Structure formats: C-alpha cells, structure tokens
Image 1 (tube, rainbow, N blue to C red):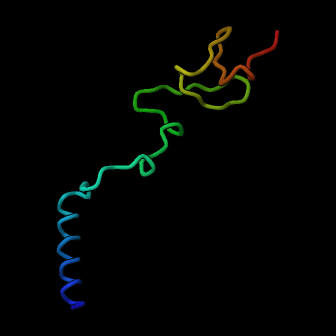
Image 2 (image 1 turned 60 degrees about the vertical axis):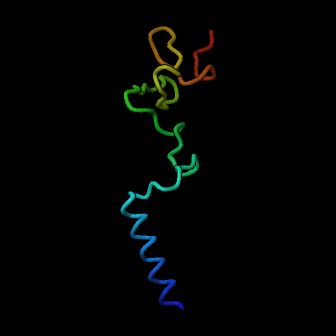
Image 3 (image 1 turned 180 degrees about the vertical axis):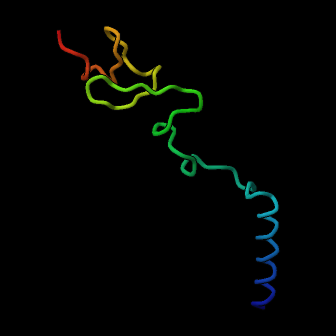
Length: 76
C-alpha cells in the first residue's frame, strides 16, 4: 500500500516539475512586494533631506531638488 502511494506521489511530482511548477495560479502573497522594489524601467532618485531613494514619478520636485514626502520639504 505504501509503495503504491509513494509511486503515485513520485509520478505526480514528476508531472508537476515537467509542467514547470505552473499548475497552480500564482498567489499575491508569493510574489515580491511591488512597493519594495520599483518596476523595471523606473528611475530612483535620492531625497535631498533624508537620503531615501524614491521612484521618480512619486517624488516631489521642488526648487531643483527631489524630496520623498512633504515632511522633507524645506519650510518657508
């Protein structure tokens, strides 16, 4: 009985590997968090105050410098 289960399990595993492991749909939890890494082709800029890197399209451009948030903007 155990030998049959082991053989069937081995065959199923081999089929899974042959299919490239793509039998089950990819879950969001399995993917990298997109907030941590920018998508390909996006440029990172450094905040002039705190030196944090931010995606250029999300950064604030003020007086020729990039800032990560309104809190880092210089006060008037």
